[in-house]
Image 1 (cartoon, rainbow, N blue to C red):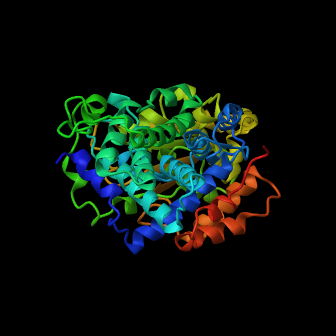
Image 2: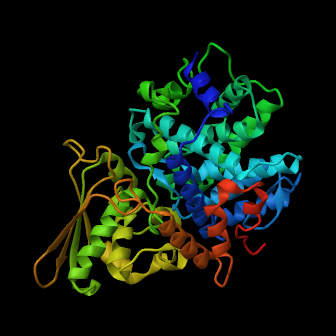
Length: 471
């Protein structure tokens, strides 16, 4: 049996059980993804995608939350996952350099709606299970590569998100093991998303997440209709032209993809982001800067220099280089992946939120002045101290008067070693909804519905309370 067959068989098996800890983690991931999606309802890029799929229209299977329209489920997945990634607030598996739920949840919810539109009910428990197996697949697939994305240009968030979305969708559609294998093969042919998006600071950073969700849904639906994408003896993942050889140069660890599948859950290692709408590599430096600035009375005019030590090649490439360009980000996406900008926002405002990354905020002269004084000290020749953690931050703020203040932060709240609970994520949801939909009074209905999602007889009860954009 191939690796693909093992993974596909487990994902679609009705007997696959999700233990209580994973149910709880999946429930939290749902609310967290809905928070990210709510924040993105009117975001530049996401809104254009939502308007486009609404204009296309088609069979009314699933909801586009930014407009309230109902469209074919693959188009809803495209629009909603793009919203969920717009502010980079969705969860991540830090040591795999991968987002996790941002493709899987919108894809699974769109398919669940589509299944119900065809006359078959999808319970909250069935939906939770599909999301859990899809997210677990993302984590296991993303942990395997050994070649850096700085070398390959491959983005595991989009690639592994496509496979995870396909497996979650296949389960909800009730595909057989053979049909699920074909869904994986079709998904391979539609993999999208490259690191080029981050260099460009383009809409494709968030659009890539939408395209991966759409591809996962399409792969499962096409397989359901009899289209083929795989052969029994040619592995989609490990074959000669399979995923790991074409996208990761054959440099990967095969053992962890299926070892202990169903017994040990890697999804429990994911991190929930605080309300910092930017690259996870910046988060510990943001926290260290906030802490140091409190000791300086929070006055950015006192800053002569902020030194940020970077010891991780991937962090440097994604968030720090080229340094001059990172100090003057021209787009939301460019700012979200700029260490100097994120640190400067923290120093000037004493907090970091979506409002600091909107187009009109990018020209804030106070922030740009401090960004010019952020110095990246890169030590990339020695061994990285990241290991199984995000990049630990060591930040030194040197004032014009007085002694330097240094702070080191290893993890921020939301990492498995400093976890957020459901109440924390509920507060994040309220903040995201308030940012995008001032005056909307439905936040508590969403929180309560997600809290009880496992007991829902129909997923329509969840769909009915999620926030919509202005239409």
